[in-house]
Length: 310
Image (cartoon, rainbow, N blue to C red):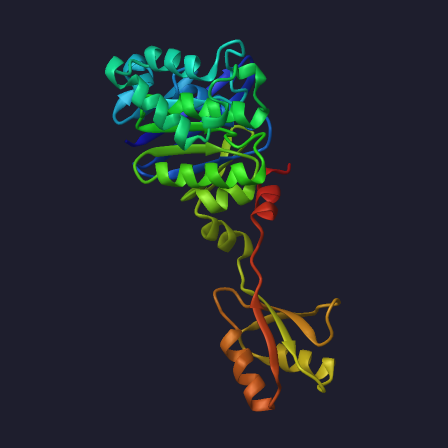
């Protein structure tokens, strides 16, 4: 089930929390939705779930407009809000039954669905406790269970791994990736490693506007522009001699010394060129021992900061 957003805008007084954004999420795609606090992520998610109306523009869930078909759309979406509102005085099983009733799950299927959610969200040990007695991590699992209880075609998850320990985070990532094979998922998080390991595509929003859209590799390529390689040459060659020879290569733009390691250099290639083959051939001709030649990837954290720091 696809999501198509067209010129979506949300104003609060004179402030544009979401400013004329457009994007598409295809069926079976996991979209990582990133941005600093106040960028417009949560507002966009609330609009897509029909919790909040836009000031302008439209979004269509499988050709159903959020302006006209809210009741139908809500049935197709599972939503985990950022603050994960739960009824703390209810036992886990009673709460999941309550949510299943609200979501219109067939009565003869409710217990089966509850059992599945308890299993996939790892709630078996805690299922008879009241929600208020659970740790933050287990409350987050209950939030995930309620979002999935009616087997929705679209999942919109706002910070789904908040409060989970490292083992739980790995388990939830696996679950989201598995769900993404059959469902459309929008995942908001501040954990950038989570986005890289879980999402097919990344959308970055800042000040209500989309500032980047693509895979992690695509974003790195755009940010880096030129290839950057760490090269280390074995002894006993002179550092200056190596540097000068590297600079003479036709594909090399800049050679910098790596101050941390002797006879190690940071080599930047010219635009749209790769210097690795030339460096290797140089070492063969000079009879140098090439001990390292490692491409240096731009970190997603650096890209995020560059795009969202005003």
